[in-house]
Image 1 (cartoon, rainbow, N blue to C red):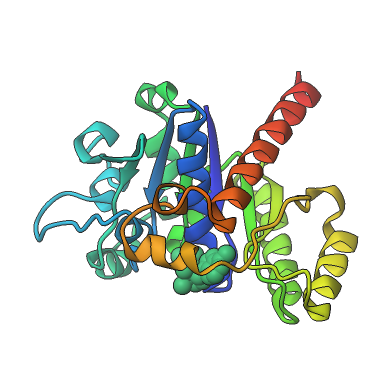
Image 2 (cartoon, helix red, strand yellow; image 1 turned 135 degrees about the vertical axis):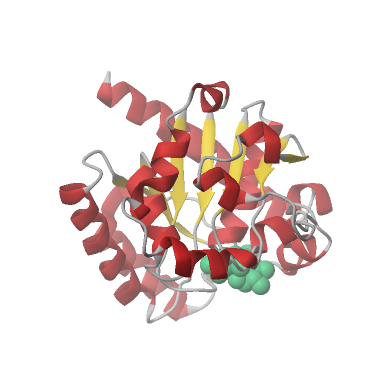
Length: 259
Ligand SMILES: Nc1ncnc2c1ncn2[C@@H]1O[C@H](COP(=O)(O)OP(=O)(O)O)[C@@H](O)[C@H]1O
Ligand SMILES: [Mg+2]
């Protein structure tokens, strides 16, 4: 069982899209994945067509220990999803005052129930608020999605120093397991320049595989499914399948390094 956080302090870089499609790809390869939506925007839930009814339990109840994963999950494409709701934004204000607020997710996951999964994916909001801090405190490693844009690197440096701070304070084992270009166009010179720069900063943490710009990726989440189900033969589905393969290769390499 491994906990993977999808983090970038910037919005719109493809965190949620990467989380959803990588989860769906791993599930189709036979891995058991639970995807936890920790963003009040609830894009991960919506991307799978899930809407929490008013008054129904959601990820908040999991964080405060009042519901288990099995009470909350909705299954899509073989992936178990713990949905979020806009109400989480209000809950955040209240939780911010509680002691131990950054370790809620970590405590909730410290439970036998999660051991039936191979991967726990945690999608986080785009700023260093309560829920991103919870993901950084709980994760074994983080995946950093990046756009091949000029300002991307600045955001990544900030995230990298945040990860180092969390290593010192809350989560010694935390590391950046991978950096993925989520909307890359190799024909655009600036995209290639950013790719080179990211590589010189992160080295081998940068995935060799990248996701190309692909409209089907956008349409798929609008249709409430992963791009793999939406159009298995499009570039987006192909890229995500190859990315999932690289993800597993890296998981095996990391496993060998630590054992
Ligand atoms: N490969 C891609 N090609 C085109 N659009 C993409 C691709 N990946 C993601 N997007 C779109 O980019 C936008 C931001 O992605 P999202 O995953 O919501 O980012 P974040 O979670 O970081 O805010 C969404 O509209 C999404 O559909
Ligand atoms: Mg998102």
